[in-house]
Length: 246
Ligand SMILES: [Mg+2]
Picture 1 (tube, rainbow, N blue to C red):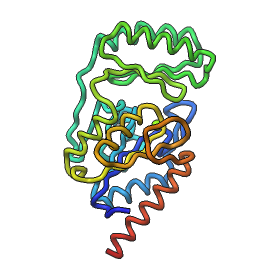
Picture 2 (tube, protein in one colour; picture 1 turned 45 degrees about the vertical axis):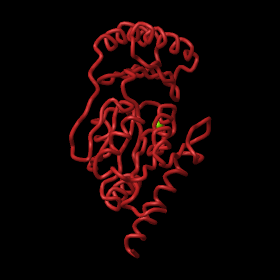
Picture 3 (cartoon, rainbow, N blue to C red; picture 1 turned 90 degrees about the vertical axis):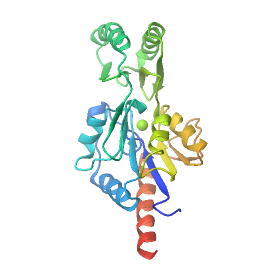
């Protein structure tokens, strides 16, 4: 392990810090995990950021009273350690077309869930796996109508967003600022959009950890969310001991 002031943590949220749930709003962040995040933030001098597909306000609500540096909507928004907010420009053309194409579909097909974000949409089919192909096709249609829009398949979800930023670019921006600058990044995530983060940290000599099975660019893999959280807990303890004994 490296000294706690020489490393930085960039952690995905859903499937990494919390178990996936039927709906994005029914996940549970345990007290133990909130406590681990708080202790990691203290021992690293604030070098812990959440890198999620959710809106930052949504992350804040779950993490309360913790308020961590964060990237939202897969890197389209970012709040640095100083509290300064950054956001990619809204793509009105895309958001309008997303509504026209997707709203009628979710009305017609009970069980589909359309998650509207400030600059992205997510079409969840967890309760209608029979509609995977229909969802993929309508999202491809959306991408074809909207230049610069990228569709990414996730776990029982298709996400569409402007391709101007991703989780990897957000992490590289964090690494230009204190307290992250000059540190070795450790990133963990469980899904397809985390692969951008894995590639970015690998390019700067960092460490990538994939949660769960499947092809990945990460060097390390853990079996599941629970195993990863045990590792995170042990890592926080080890870093704290290093400070106490240092
Ligand atoms: Mg995830």
